[in-house]
Length: 229
Image 1 (cartoon, rainbow, N blue to C red):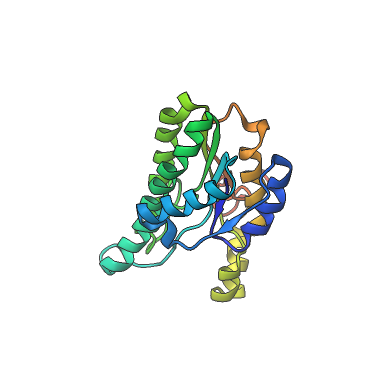
Image 2: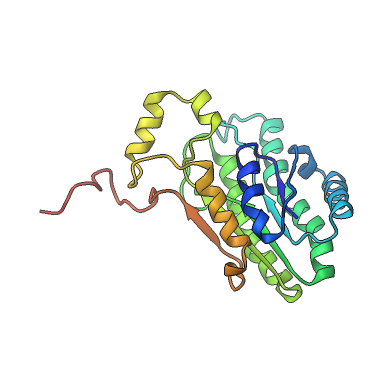
C-alpha cells in the first residue's frame, strides 16, 4: 500500500515499487490525512481494490513561513494538522490491514528542518517534523509485534518545482555552496531512500530515519572546503 501526495515522487516510487509487487500508486490531497475519517476511507478504498498491500508511504506535507510570534493561528494549525496529525491518522489507518497480514512497512517524510536545524519563520513546520521523528520511534516499538517496521526519510534541500518557482538563482546558489556535495538534491534521491526502506534489504531496520542532504549537516563552519595547513 503506497500513499503519496507529491507529483514528483509519485512516478518515481510507482516504478521503483514494481519489483516489490506494488504497482499501483494513489495520489492524494493533504485533506485525506488531516481528518481521521478521510484517511480511513481513502486507505480502505485502496485496500478493497488491492487486498495485498503492505507498504505505506506518507511522502508530502505543508510548509509555510511565519514568525512564531506573528503567524496566524489558522496557518499554524493547518501545518500542524496536515503534517503531524495527518501522520498519526495515516499510521492508524494503515495499521488495520498490516496487522491483519502480520507484515508491513510504514514510511514517513521528516526533514532535517526540526530534528537538526531550523531558521526564523519555520517554528511550526520544525515542530511537526521533530514530532514525526518521535512518532516513528514510538510506532516502531508498538507495531513491531505485528511484523511492521516504521521508518522515515529526512530530506535536506531538494530542488523541487516549488523551489524553482519561488526561489531565485541566488538563493539556490547560496544553498549549493553550503552543501559539501555541491548541489541540491533531486526528488529521485529522496525516492531511492524510500525504496530502500520499503525493500526486503531493510527488513531489520525500524524506528530510524535516513538523512538525504548531501552532507549539509556535517560542516562545523562555512570554511569546510578549505584544506588544513
